[in-house]
Every structure is written in C-alpha cells, then in structure tokens.
Image 1: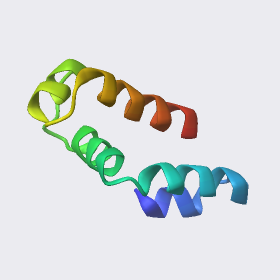
Image 2 (image 1 turned 120 degrees about the horizontal axis):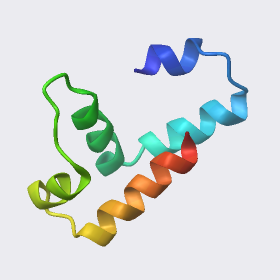
Image 3 (image 1 turned 45 degrees about the horizontal axis):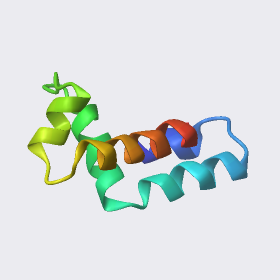
Amino acid sequence: MFRYILDNVMTDDQKITILKALADPVRLGIVRGLGSKECTRKCSELSEASSLSQPSMSHHFAKLITAG
C-alpha cells in the first residue's frame, strides 16, 4: 500500500494528505481490513465488529474519502 502511495504520480501535498489520514490507527485499520482479500464486509458490519459507533465510523470513512 505505501509503495503505491510513494511511487504513484502525485504531488507531495497529495501524498502528505493521504499519509496524514492513514496516521490515525482507526483509519489505518479500516484500510487494512478493506484491503484484505477475504474482506466482504459492508460499512455497517465494520461498525458492528468494532468498538466504534456508526457515526464515528462515518467520520473516519469521510476522512479517508477526502484524502483520496
């Protein structure tokens, strides 16, 4: 994942934005979970499986989407 970010044709500002979003342990865990080959979970299922509320999960997803 990080190799893609660093090798991809992005500006430094875009790379910084993505890396800042992934610096949060919750968001990094979300990306890791969604990136696994066996992942077939929906967002609501991720919320239920974690200790976070649905609004909190939505907040983290919004941050990831905004980061790109």
